[in-house]
Length: 403
Image (cartoon, rainbow, N blue to C red; front, side, top):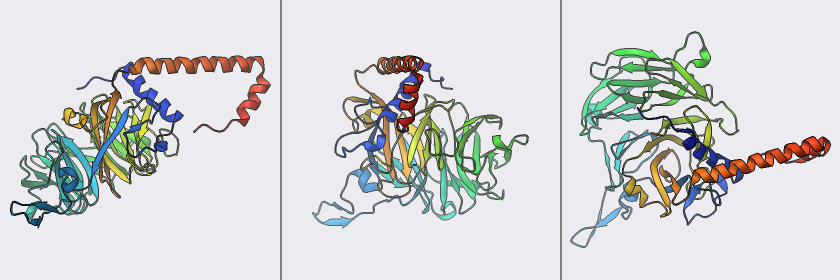
């Protein structure tokens, strides 16, 4: 169980939101230098690191050929990500489910990318749309084409399938301790299974006395380290949360084009700080919230030449192998976490961002000074209004709308 973020930590990220409002993240024009969110002159909180779409990108090799000892060129197989549907990270590895029927395992520090070994025979995937990995390294794949959940061992070999006789369409999946959570978008419910026996244990998401607390056309789900379940609801345009027994804990967001609102909410996850990341396929960005649903900042944009997103669908956050990812970041930017975003179109298919801070800068002091300056301006404005309300009213009515 991780600690809830302190008020100071939340204020640091909230300050980034104010910076974003002052300078839109989509205005970044320097495609050759580091891409930060929010862009300069604001203090950076996130940096776009790199992206990849195939094994050649991961291995940094020539696209289709490599040299052999005889001096001849021989064609080598390139593993390509076609249309990713789900992504998760575990023990330094990245697992990418691809609608084309693939499950790719990526180890970026080791520069390797390979197909799941058991993706053949009885374990052959048809249309995987969700992937999860437990603490033992077992891989669980929700396959909407086969309408079942396939389970593979820590070596990638196929073991068995569950939920295949439950008349459901598994559209996303999560594991927590010894339980398997399977989401069914058509029925707007999460079914909990015993992965050993395949028995259904309970259902989550139906709140009989209040439909507004029930799941509504869910698109993605996740379970954090505390066992809190979060669901992206396409039917209501919000994020709802539940405990493992199905008790409603709260929700935030709604349909709209304002800050903290959603167009097409999809992937959702939470990090060890308690920050909640929500992918929006409509806005083509990721919004970051506190665990209470307060908008802190956002990053990504379809308009960026570098570091943008193209129909993003899922997200995963990791604190593994930070020394490696630090080598990809600007030398003055200290990385604390890495964020992986899956894009269903364009290049790259997987984008990497780093959460961190500029070295040698006290972010708390900077944001405190900014808050004091805003308070000072607000007080000055109030005095002007009290002294000459008519002039202030004219000025307010003629001012352009806020961004």
